Image (cartoon, rainbow, N blue to C red):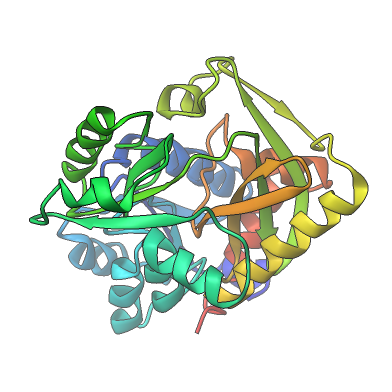
Length: 308
């Protein structure tokens, strides 16, 4: 849809929600909503609770801008509901959203398409934890819930005792836990907009680990833009990000995270609804590419309904 067409429609910015990432979603949604309203759109914020269908009908929403993170928003559930209601929405469709939200499924798909990702094992609630000792012979490992974001429930473990503690912490958020090799190197992220990679950002947390505090507290992380990488490695990373976006079936905006070790890189995950807060990475990369925040929001909005 063109901007002129969209300005005649009621836009619902879906924010908040029911996941562990609710507070971040409220910040993302507020930034998007303020930007749309300032640009002249008939936009309203909708806190996506279990009464979301009734809210959408009551507000007369004609197009949805999804600013939700985590479960019940980024995982295909809300996307499926909007399909049933016949409301076009931003971002990836049902299948791509569900696949990208599940880190284990994402990694299996990446491996199938020969995209490098750290070696891993999977633990399910109810399994014998002692069996992990046979499957996890090398440390350190990164332990994380299979279907959460924003580094929630994540830990780096260096011995069996820490591993069991990390698994127990991750199980509070998801019955499936991913344990993957820890890659000692630099963390970079590549935004992808409508299939095209944006400039690469290297993330350098002051505390050494890009955890929830470093990610969402201003001044706790240094962002190197563009990432100071050798030219051919830079190009390969952008190509890999665009390929990961394609094989998962993403639409609109996404962000692909990597670890880089010398000239090797490893894909960690694909985020189908990147954060849009004041410290978020996608807006930084878009700004460097010449797309200000309002232009970025309008570009994402214009893709609503193109995710079938």
